[in-house]
Image 1 (cartoon, rainbow, N blue to C red):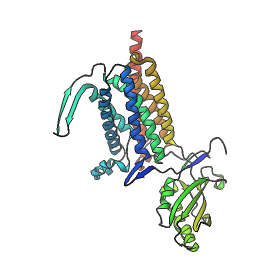
Image 2: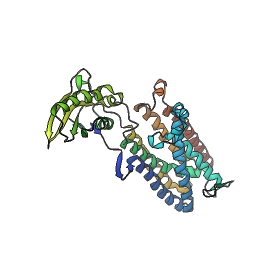
Image 3: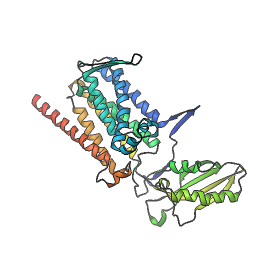
Image 4: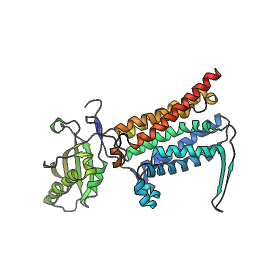
Length: 380
């Protein structure tokens, strides 16, 4: 095994089940991002002489803006036709579909409202007030500079949640390193028959077919329930149903390579009265794009927090925001070359939607840094 080697990833997106309630890794990490961010903001605001109550208000703005902006961003940037035809589906957030660029727009808008208006709403009486009011010592850029510190950390956790969900996958590495996202294969086989108890996908020793490093050897182990199935029934199921799954379904063939013309290479044995089928096939290692973005966001958080900690009130307004936009969305632009497009119509574009949306944010970041540099020169 070399230093860089592929791994087979089959993590269950569900953390645990409590009665009829399912706690998923993504939801937990999403919520954890806001909870940790709030504690960091308490520290920042206290160090700079502002009330903790302001952080509590900011948290409400951030939660609403992130969820609403990310959802509407996905709706209008990626699948407008689908959602305009079925508007009720917009509210089905649990089915997936959040866009980080939409979240960025939502957060920037919400922070403008926070800095310039006093908004109060009584949900019992269904009445609200909307008054223009500046917050002393908390200009728009001052607030955004502090918020991007924790947004980077939250982005790190959210992208790791995407990894746990085996979503937003990268393109094939066409080499022996990367991640084989085999969760879809496991779920498909487990749901294909009541006879299946569980499925495991693991690495195995071997060589790629025809020397093609794009495909790496893996093993699928299918454990059947002890329900008096005959050996013939299990073999027929394996050679027909499982073979069909591995060769005919596009969502499966994107993760597993099984030549349609070749017979399955499998072994059948019994363990404690139940049959176990061991299939030797090939996986497709992909770039773990979610981890690339997660690690990058963590490093950006460390950089921004360090700069704030060293300078604090001497930090020029707009500097941290400018750095955040340039680095995060600059890296996002290049990471998109390693990621599969989210929707099919992006395949016809010279750049995908994520890249087009990143360009103006990077430009805004450079403008902010240029203005900060000009102001610093005049002061000097």
